[in-house]
Image 1 (spheres, helix red, strand yellow):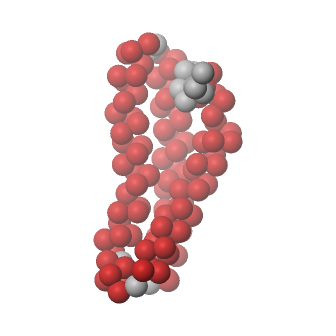
Image 2 (cartoon, one colour; image 1 turned 90 degrees about the vertical axis):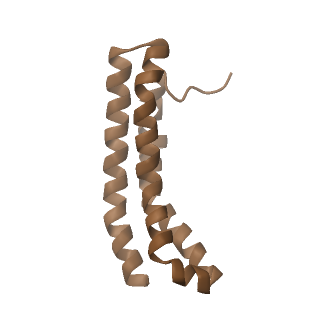
Length: 112
């Protein structure tokens, strides 16, 4: 299980990061060409696709290690931690480096 998990993490981190880079680029491209409700409507499929891509490694690991998860509660924590490792670099990139650019484009605006 450990080696399989490490292989999933090794493949998942660059994949999730690439998905985040493409996600940000698409949102900025949409904001450049659309505004208002049309921007929201055009960006909605991008949001949905990105959320599916980011959650896919979790569902894959849950399916792949189902017997280990049923045998031990610790395995659930290991799978959750592994998924966190896969998505953490993407969230740091999005939250630390691109959030202001996206806010300037009208996305992820803070609550008033």
